[in-house]
Image 1 (cartoon, rainbow, N blue to C red):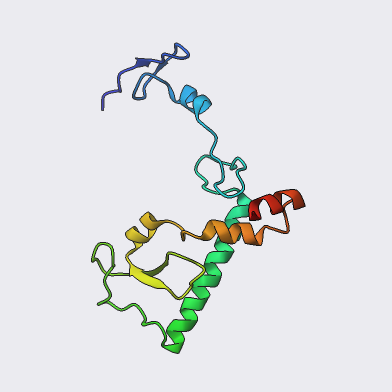
Image 2: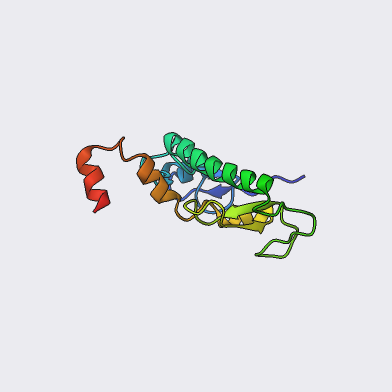
Length: 147
């Protein structure tokens, strides 16, 4: 197997085997830090979506909504997903129920795993985060966000 051609980095002037005009070291230096969409703190890693404290809150909110769906399935209020259940987005076999709003935990639609990943977290998770963190914020900040 042949080696990849060397390229001259336009920022540091060193040669590298990667693609493009900038080496991976300079790309890493220039990378914008990832910021949590909820608390606006910098995350511990560029691959992590949320600040660690916020991710636990989001998981807790999601688990509570999921528990209500599981209970409704056991009671027969919501039909369990079967092999005939199709994804509302693409038509493939559904494997999960998706919440668009955690405020209505039983308002769910069947989706396949790929579509569930594309949809991301529920649209109102930010409001639940703010409500659950109201006592953790300084009083002046809490009042200004509630207005």
